[in-house]
Amino acid sequence: MGLPISVTDVRKEFQTDTGSVTAIEQFSFEVESGEIITMVGPTGCGKSTVLNIILGVLPPSAGEVVVGQRRPYEEFDSFSGELAAVFQKDRLLPWRTATENAQLGLEALNDSGAHPEDQVDKWFKMLGLVGYEDAYPQELSGGMRQRVGLARAFVVDPEILLLDEAFGHLDEVTATDLREDFLDLVRNGQSRTTAMFITHDIDEALTIGDRVLVSRSPGRVVDTINVPSSLNEEPELHQQYRTRILSQLQ
Image (cartoon, rainbow, N blue to C red; front, side, top):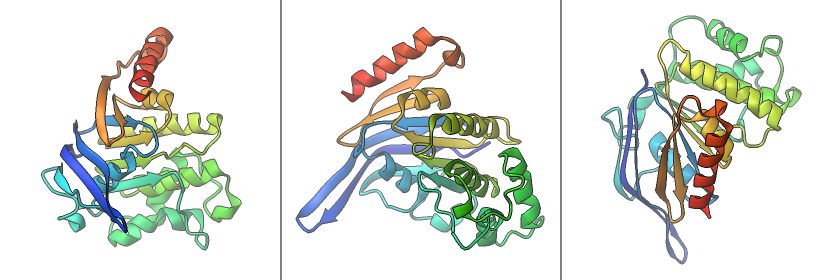
């Protein structure tokens, strides 16, 4: 099972030429091992900042973030291979093929197990990328590039997967297909990965998450919704939750 996440009274301030700016304040939530959490909120409410603190890229100005009994920023190196991220921009290297891009995480880990090509091949089959192994990013559609990004994340078998607007720039048909593939891979894998998915799309948040965290400026969680497994089969209940989230955001 994936690692649990604990965020307690976290505040993050950034220094500017004119003083300090508070990006988030009193941000608190828990993510259980193997749980899928979605976070929805308007631009500027601190969603991406929280994700970067969990990744260990940024330190909190106050409060505490604990991932599996460790603090990501202070113990950044200890999380190598345990945390993986997928962003809105695929961040593929244009001079590397799809396979070579997907191998990046394994190369960084100096993985001594199976050949990287074999591990990547498994995920390419699962993500519908067979036949595109030698294609360069500029030869792939946006959806296919994002599939390569997912393969790059999954190939290291992470304990935690963090996604920031990963499907937000794609057309709805492609985004729907990728959501289904993502959920299948996370929920039906050998060891269920803990996942946190940031989105602006309320319907996407309700479709993906076991729980939905609703955030609002100035950087805090204002509501938490436990999503029933039958929600997508109950349009009226889905609409009730959607209305509830909208009321919190307005």
